[in-house]
Image (cartoon, rainbow, N blue to C red; front, side):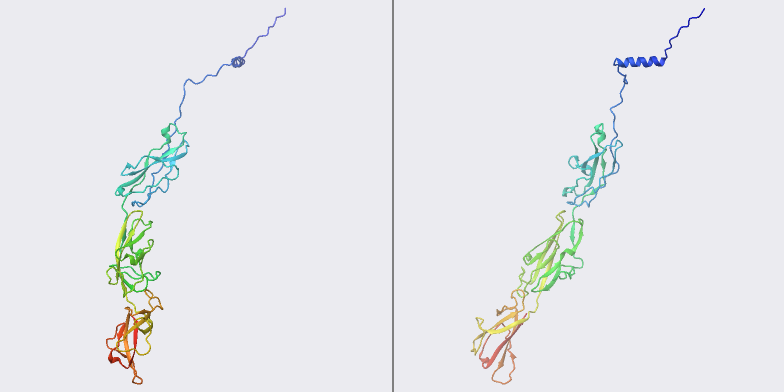
Length: 369
């Protein structure tokens, strides 16, 4: 009798699992999510890696700057977008904290007179981009700079042993330690006051020069270089306030940025120079040359032209001028080969003929003083 063999159904577990999964998915079942969350994610705070290093003299009116912004780091890779800054005096904020509006430059600070003696510092905070979270991590801790003490401006004129004439300045003269000097008449006399600055604590500033005093109208000054010029003067006709031929002027130097100023007085004496006579004539009161035979009692006048570049340009004749020397001379026309002889005491611009002058002819010897 034959045995009946029946086939057995074998179901593998892996096949079942796959089938069940497929069935579930086909009916729209959702995957499970975690029962807890991690976040929100916090970034790390941006950091200034070095203290700011400010630069300046500290002189009132002269800007103090931050030549270069300090380094920074941000481990989140957030970018630097700005700087919060505050200038401080003795640790106290000057005004309110402000954004610089730049990642590479901070506005400078210009000290005022009220700041003198105080210590200036710069407080900085780095500002990262808006993705920083929480917001506080986008701003660094504050870092303070080194300090600079604010001082008043100072500029000082010091003649020392005097001012030497500058060969590159025509008409330049020496000035002694007391501010005195002298130069010739009828020409410009110059003094290089710009070389007298002994101290200026704002070395990069531009100084300005000015003059004052009763004789200032006879002077000029280059406001940029400090070269003082006494206009051409006539030693015989002084125009200074005292009328003694010495011209006094106060010279002032100022630093417009700091307000520092100093003043000194210089005195220039105008020396007389002898002007050479170009022509001399004996004339009457109207300036007409005398010809013929003047009679006793006639007043002879002189008409002289000097090489004087101030009041009388070359070629201009002046009658009975005061800035000349005179010597009237006479010669006896009744004696052959008679020589010219000085008339005693006849040293004025005019001469009146006397009875003792009969038979003589006259002339005048004149020259500049």
